[in-house]
Image 1 (spheres, rainbow, N blue to C red):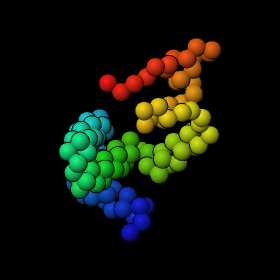
Image 2: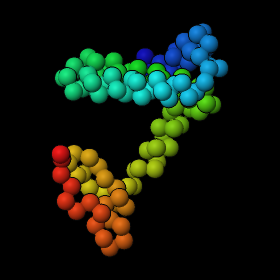
Image 3: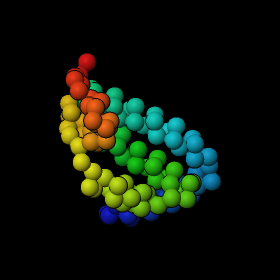
Image 4: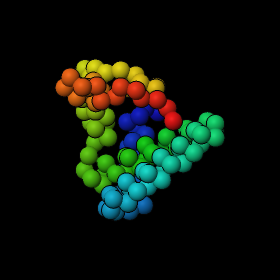
Length: 115
């Protein structure tokens, strides 16, 4: 099954349950709940829980997009277009944009360490 087919099935599922006309703000709250569950699974080394959580977040994002009149794939493509030329550095395992590292000639992140 393709990603697009799965998105269509999730949209049909949402329509059948009356979620298509529900409050999108509730989906954003649900997204934070699912993120928390995913983080918890990751911290515990529960790979199956991480997979489940990522899938749940995609379901919630798909329903949110349906409710808000957005196309999930288009949002993803636009995000890629925004980052594809971005320059920066990996600091402690996280990519940080140049503009967030330097503020003019002053280094904003000069002695960053994990705490």
